[in-house]
Length: 428
Ligand code: GP9
Ligand code: MN
Image (cartoon, helix red, strand yellow):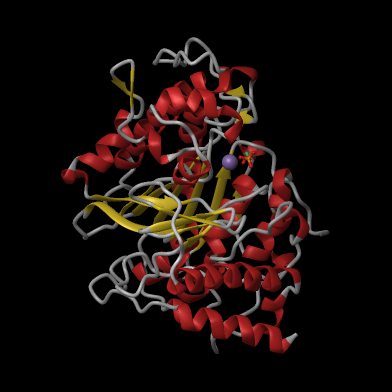
């Protein structure tokens, strides 16, 4: 009820970090291209297999200052069972997924105040999601309407012939290739969310598409993970070239993020071979890093930034870049570019990572040594704060509390009946 939403509001307003004045509004009205790197973990960046870079194209973005990208190398995914759907929920709402199940499915008819709707209402953006799977997967066709996603280009818009499809759906190269005309057809400015798929467990790839030899751990999905990651990397290079050719590259905000881990703890033996270290619970938590890589038109790349954060911080960061103050909205993350950004990162299971220490299953570890430590009062406070944050996010979702929240005078609640995807008729 309204007391509960006030409790959430007080919490998020108190956590809120003021924008960095040098970046606030620099990307106002610019097209935004969001690229979802399926199952992509940070350890792949600059990793060499058989002496070869696995992802030379992504590496060039993070290593070459001329490309003007900024790479955050201490970002964590924060997802749970909802996997991709959790990553979408988190990045477009700055709300955590649920501890069990997928909020996309169980909270698909909630009221949301999503990035897509805010961009549309405040700056007339058109939002479009692109994905080579069918629209009902993860209940997307229902919840996207609550988010106010204008267009959903699902599998029915693509040529899903046998040679184009593998594993869950469309291969990344035909996906990006066929997305180009759809992207060009959008009214500008747009917020385009491109969701890749080929780098998905169990990492299946055909001989014609594999340009890298598999790893040799003997664990099949770990071995081929590098090959599908390479394929994804090549598809990105092709997409960036197409964007340049279409005149959509220079002046767009382009960002890429890994949605969640690709290699689970069931593969610790093989991962020991890959990383050269025993995968302890501490080490496993550190492996939950996913890249966040962003180019902002007119802003020089900042190289590699070591600030700690999570996917929860993506939305407030973007809002500030386009010049919309995040303060009005209920958000659990804070702007990564802000001096006031809080560097503690709650995981959905209650674990926690900060720049100095990690809390895993209730045990505190020193990040430098990986050794157990006795927590200080302050560490315990931060841990409790993180747990409270998760609890409030759950309260928000389970009580559908955004129904009771009006961010500002301009806000119009999203009407889901106004959206149609694919071949849907007027009857919803
Ligand atoms: C399916 C794709 C995969 O459409 O997004 O979802 P995941 O299994 O990663 O949650
Ligand atoms: Mn996924």
